[in-house]
Length: 318
Ligand code: FAD
Image (tube, rainbow, N blue to C red; front, side, top):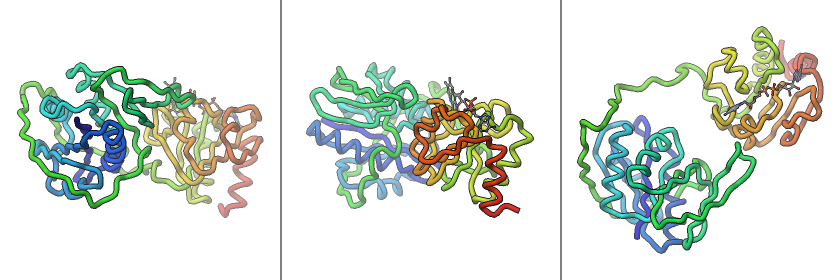
């Protein structure tokens, strides 16, 4: 029996989730008493093999097909690997790419799919846990099948340690070019030149409470004073006041800064889903019953237009 995990790479680098999949895959393989195979499709497969040779990996399958991610190539290759290896579990990253091909693969192979898995337990049956309703509840499913597909949430498992002794095998895939459907022509970063809020240590985040676009410079002044990055709730993006890559939440980005300052944000579940992992949460809101205070470490129940100028003065704005 085998557990098959599929690595992910972008622009020449393996993404961390690949090494996390090794840890999750090994955990499951141990429960099932099976081998762990990892497949890497396209790009610098030779280079990737060295990095993927982590503790717990039994076999690495290299597929020299394409440079960057292509839905059709991944879907067809994984289906062919599945036919060859007949794995109990297929573990894919719960990433933009993974969520692109996982449903197609599961449908094509007629297998059950559970996405965004955060915990795995047992072998008979295997129990998988995922969050529901924007992180309000966790649900554990018994997988009622001997074979299944799981997408694994990034950053839930630690990365596997280097120093494995995997066997490396080349897998020859037979791509039906006519069925690919899409051609990758190139890459353009969304919001090129803009910041990546997922990397920021301190985020100053604004919500509908700022009332007007003209008030954003006030918050930018606070961000400057704190050496912080500006992010927002969804209405700010919907209004076109900030670009989409600044949105925190379920349909935006998941952020885990050291400090998250929520200004005029109510704390709707869809927003909280994207920032509840922050180390320290500070809320500034006139409504003492705003849900954001349920998760805030510190709160200032006051008018932001009074509080922000005072903070700017305190923290060194001009
Ligand atoms: P509001 O809920 O209107 O809150 C404004 C807050 O500002 C209030 O609490 C108010 O008391 C306070 N306030 C007003 N004036 C002041 C003042 N002068 N000083 C201090 N405080 C003041 N939302 C997201 O943010 N991110 C997402 O990714 C996201 N995805 C979604 C996905 C789906 C499928 C759906 C249905 C919704 C999603 N939403 C998302 C929207 C979400 O449900 C909320 O509508 C949104 O988060 C509310 O934004 P807000 O807190 O800025 O506004």
